[in-house]
Length: 439
Ligand code: EPU
Image (cartoon, rainbow, N blue to C red):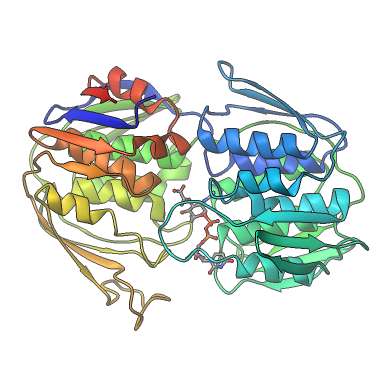
């Protein structure tokens, strides 16, 4: 598979593609399967690298995993869970952030877990302090090794009270996966409530867990002794859907995204409409298109759910380079998520970065040395360039820019995109993109 694409841009993308289950949900549901006393079946699973990585991690721990790619059905049997070989677990390090979520289930099943140094996209420091503090609160002991972290809880985990300093998606999932089998009640305050987390709550409830979610970001979990296998259909990937929607806007195209689900995308759809994009919601998906005329500059600010997802920011920025006027984007979730704009500048955009909070919120990064606000002066014609993909969402945004730009671009490192976008080259062909793979 070629890692470099030569893209001939300036043509509207048009046609129909389908998105399947969410990259930021499916691996977590796979981890939850470890907690069952029998097999679990997950449907609507996309063929992306993160699913491969977690399948291999589960196999290393004795789970039998079968994946019917065509049907998107994953069957996981955790009957014979065992400790993985440290060296083998370590070999998977660097490719995903999911291993940290195995802690709770492995502590319940085996009394110990080994977590290698974590990978994932380079979009900020991405510490795991909330995760480790949560595990400590349940009674786990944490030992730092040169190759990772060893966590033990020979006497089991005990329900506890946790308050997250920030509504972290991963730390909320960590706490849920540890609490469902812990002894007694756990109260988690300041939890993240993203739709992907609510779908994980649904999975755990199907398995026999008792979980209640309050409107004030408090989640209460009553620990139970035994959990069962589940059958579940993963919610749709709202980040992928928004990425194709942004591609339709930036290339003046028209894309029907089968599987796009309006209730999970309300905030995105509001922003899309304010910029001047058009959409029409159908039972089986959403049609997104550029209705002609000028796109409008806007002010937007990323935030935790129900705010504007940080993962929508990068593709939307590409569309905003074609809007008339001055757009302001304030990134409040990650301190370092504008690295991708460097390549956009090479393609002719006028984007300036600022350390100040250029929004209504003073965020956690105020008075710190992070360029986390952007001002985009538009519209600027985009021209082809040689670009190297920095991370997953930034990478897809580079691809959108190359497809919108006049002339030819060479985009290197596209393999990164396969981490989270199923069959993206095939989908580009379905949308009549003009590109070739080069060696
Ligand atoms: N944070 C800490 N300490 C922690 C955990 C998080 O300071 O222990 C900070 C992070 O540094 C960040 C903020 O809290 O500034 C939010 O991080 P969060 O824990 O919510 O992110 P995550 O669970 O690591 C998931 C998605 C990301 C998505 C974020 C926010 C997965 C595998 N990843 O990451 O997705 O951006 O939630 O919604 O679910 C992507 O898909 O490209 C991606 C990066």
